[in-house]
Amino acid sequence: MLNVLAVAGYRSLRELVIPLDRLNLVTGPNGSGKSNLYRALRLLAEIAQGRVIPSLAREGGLQSTLWAGPERFSRAMSAGEQPVQGGRRRNPVSLRLGFAGIEFSYAIDLGLPSSQNGAFGHDPEIKRESAPMPPRPPAFRKSGRTRPSSATTDRISRRPFRRFVR
Image (cartoon, rainbow, N blue to C red; front, side):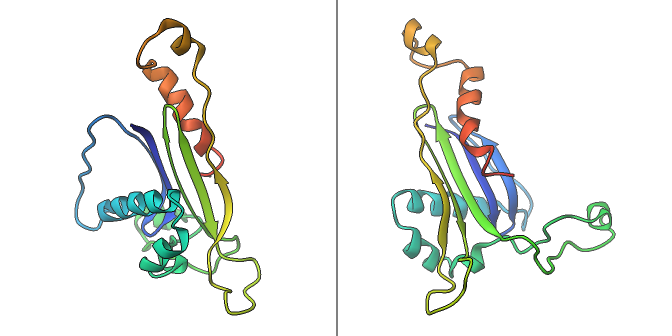
């Protein structure tokens, strides 16, 4: 079972870390990003199975999946006085996706190549990829319980995403 889903820089989802339970319900008004959340989850599942290039190609390429909004929100944008829109970027953009369960986790950071020379200048590069196997907590091993406490689950499941969702 997945405990956490992390998405950053995917379409309308700037930064999102969602704790998951056995049953999860996603609601919201039209245009709030529900479909993008499902699309990000599907993309993450395909990428984790080794299908990075074909999955991104079906999405229209890496550039069409990236967050197009601003790097930082101005006070006017935050107050609703100015529309939220992107501008010229100073820093590299990337698509970061990850998930974690109690016994497994996976995170990937995709970006554009640093040099855009040649025929493959717009193909995605894997900037970072991580698939750590978190150690089982001592209380879990010794007690024989079938499930760790929620405090232990939260501590384990959030660890791989701290460096990816920032």
